[in-house]
Image 1: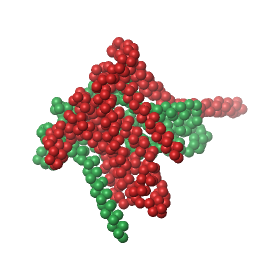
Image 2: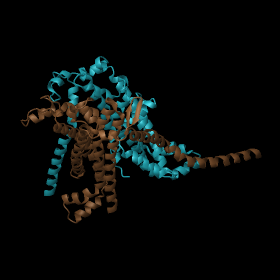
Image 3: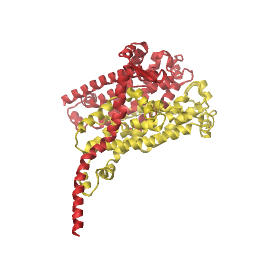
Image 4: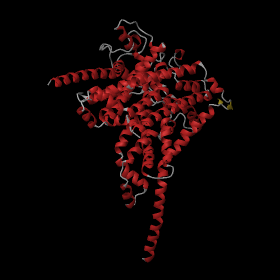
Length: 283
Length: 309
C-alpha cells in the first residue's frame, strides 16, 4: 500500500518533469507561431517574445504571402520547387536504393561483400568533405542550378541501401523460386512479389528521405543560383538579414514549411519514428 | 505439328539458359545504381579533392604547388574553426548523451504515464529544418532587451547580453540549439534500445534483491553500450560537419572574429567566396582525416564490445 502511493507520487513527479521538457521543446515553435501573427515592426522593437497581445495580432503576414506582392512573389516558387524536389528525390531514392539493398541481400555473386563494404564506407564519410569537387563536377555535367543537380549526386543513398538490405535479408527466398517457376523475370519477382513485402521499409524510408530532402540546405545552396529556383530553406535563409524588409514572409513562411510536416507526423507517427531512428539498427 | 513441337522445345531450350544467365546477371543490374553513383559522385570527387589539395586552382589556370596548401593551414582562421568545432563537439557530447539517456530510461519506466504524448512532443523539434530552427534561435538569442533569452535572464536580475557577439555565449547558443534539435531523436535511439532489453534480466535481478539504481547501472547501462557508441559517433560526426547552424546564426558573411566559423564553413568560405578550390579541398581532406580517426575509434570500441560477447 505504501509502495503504491509512493509510486503514484513518483509517477506524478515524472509527468511534471516531462511536462516541463515538453514545454521547452514546443516553446520555440510556439514563439515563432505567435511572431508570425504580429507585424515585423514588433519583432524589431521588442525581439521574439511570447506576449499574447491580441491588439497587435493579425493575419496580415499570411495575407502578404498569399497576395504574391512585395517580397512574397517568390515564396510559392520555392514551395513548389521544394515539393517537386522532395517528391522526385524520395521516389527515385527509394526505387534505386531498395533495388541495390535487395540485390545485396538476395543474391550471392562475386564482389558482393566488397560492394557492401563500399556502402558502409560511403556512410562513414561526411559529404561535406567533397562539396567543392562535387560542385565542379556538377558544372561539367551541366546539372548546376537545376533540380537534377540537387537530386542526382545523393539519390543513391547508403543509409537506405543498408536499411533495405537488412530488411530484405529477412524475406523468404522460396518466393523467388516460386516466382521463377511461374515465369517471372528477376525484376518481375522484385516488383511484383518483393516490393509489396517490403512496404514497411518503404514507409520508414519515405519519411527519412522526404524529410531530409525537404530540410536539406548545404548542397542545394551551392547548386542553386537563381532566386526563382531556390528551395524553401534557401529562400528563407536569404530573408534573414538585418537589411531584409521581408520579415513578414520570413515568419509566416517558416511556419508554413513546418505545418505540413506536423500534420503528416500526427498521422504517421510510427513511420516517422522508425524512419528517423533508422541509423540505430544493428548491423 | 511435329515441327511445331520441335520449335517449342527449341524455344524452351533457348529460354532456359537465358533465364539462368539473367539470374547471374540480375544482381549486377540491381546494384548498378550504386556502382554508377559511387564511381561518379563519390570516388571521383574524393580523388579530385585529394588532387586539388596539392594544387592552386584558379579559373583556367591549375598548377601543382605541392604542400603549400597544407602549410597554409597553419593560420589563425583554421585554428579558430577547428577549435570551434572541437568545443561544439565537446559540449554536444556532454549534453546529448546523458540527458537523452536519462529521459529515455525515465520514459521507459513502468510508472510513467502518457508516454506516447511525451515521446511525440520531445520528438517534434527534430522535424524542424535547421534553417527554421536557426531562424528561431537567432531571434531568441537576439540582443534586444525584450527577446526571449534576455528577458529570461532578467528574471534573475542579469542585464541583457549580446549573445551572438561573444565566443562563449554564442557557443552556448549553438549548444542550446543542438540540444533542442537532437535530444528527442537521441532519446528515441536509447528508448528503442531499452525496449530491446529482455524483461527476464530485470526480473531475475529483482529476485536477487537488486535495487532500481543498481539495476540501472549493472544491466541497463552495459546493454546500452552499442547504441551509446553509435550516438557518440554521430554526435562527433555531426559536430565536426556542422555548418548550417552557424550559417543561420551569423549569415553568409560570417561571424565577428570568426567566433562561429566551422571547418565546413571555412571550406564554403574559401571555395565559394574566395574561389580558392585548392585550399578549400585541403580543409576538406583535413576534415576527412579527423573523420577517419573517429571511425577507427568507433570500430575499436565496437570491437571491444564483440570480444566481451
